[in-house]
Image 1 (cartoon, rainbow, N blue to C red):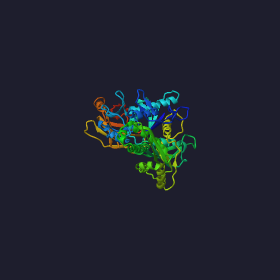
Image 2 (cartoon, helix red, strand yellow; image 1 turned 120 degrees about the vertical axis):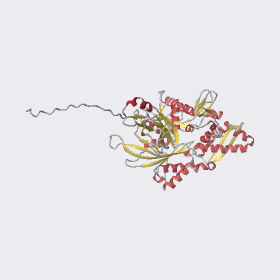
Image 3 (cartoon, rainbow, N blue to C red; image 1 turned 45 degrees about the vertical axis):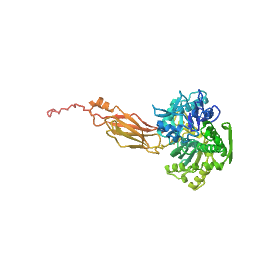
Image 4 (spheres, helix red, strand yellow; image 1 turned 180 degrees about the vertical axis):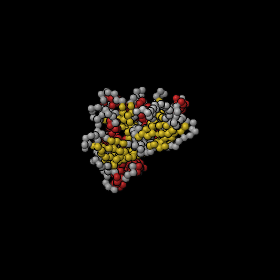
Length: 544
């Protein structure tokens, strides 16, 4: 199966032998499921069943949380004004979590009660486990053990490792991780590919609830198989940029905050009370989401919440132009990730032939207006905004195709696919005691293709440490031992020709995770071999 792991919703696609690729329905017969798990009751509730509990006990229903997998935190960071909440970015006004700290691991935990205190990875594992049960129900009870999960293209290695770990906790084997924008591009290649010999560039604008991701790809066709004339699409990702400050849910919160102020102005005696009431604030967010959807189709929408606070109903209206004014700061930054992605790909809008909008938040009319004007102005021509893909589901089906293409168990349309890293990875070899160090070597610069294999080769006769850097920040250290032991032991009796040659393989996997494979040391020994050659006797001169 594949899981398109969105911050607000996730989608599951199932790939079975002899059956078409399908989107899995949840228990409510919906094709997308809320990314939420509730610990409000003794028995967990998942997805759409968990969301109602958020208004009763917001601290026991984690949502929009999994972007926190990528960061380090201290115990002071989890305070209301701490670093955790800054990175969460949605604020502590409409979201209230009871956070604790696991001193042994050095990570924050969600505290649900005295017995249930879970790290972010474990909470995510609960959601992946629920996705697994949905897939198994759809596959008539047959076990589903392999999965492909989508992640943002800017996800660092710790984030990716945490997603893989969460999958393992859920009883799944994560085959690979796929960038969301890349998954959309692969799904688009199923229905469209340029003529053989032509190269086209496309741009995918993915505006979700929590972030906006822009991906620039190069598409072409190439010979596939032994049959003359048979071609397969080629999708090469050139660049991808993510902005975590632009998203549909930020628009929801703008509406919720404006409505909160209106209520406080109308009911001044309740102003302080509602501001500190998580249940009332959650009701505002829920209605804001509904109102935003109505404003996408109408120029005015009602905002009605029954029994908002202290049995007081709240009713008002909001016009689309008011909504656009309160969100103007975000709309002004809408095209910045587009420019960054084009710059990283060394292209301009005049080089882009296709534009696809995906995700859920692009449906806001102002977003479409801004993008249309920008593309036309920068491209020097009218560029149609394509809507060929199902913006809610195409990432899930595209990710499943990536996994199926790499497997020999499925016969699917061949798609040649290459993605790139958005981070720079470098290594440095140093001594264990710190007496010496070699130069830092950049093995994979930003934009390097995923799936690369590089090898470090150097001469050494002692144990050493390999330091791995991500964007010039030390990520981890690998201590390599055993070389000194063999040099003083078995190899001490050898007649070595020189210092052993050490090879260290450093692979950038297709999932974006760097793996340092088992290092090897090779020695050359000189052997002296005595060989006796028989000398041929000279013939006697008197012999006839």
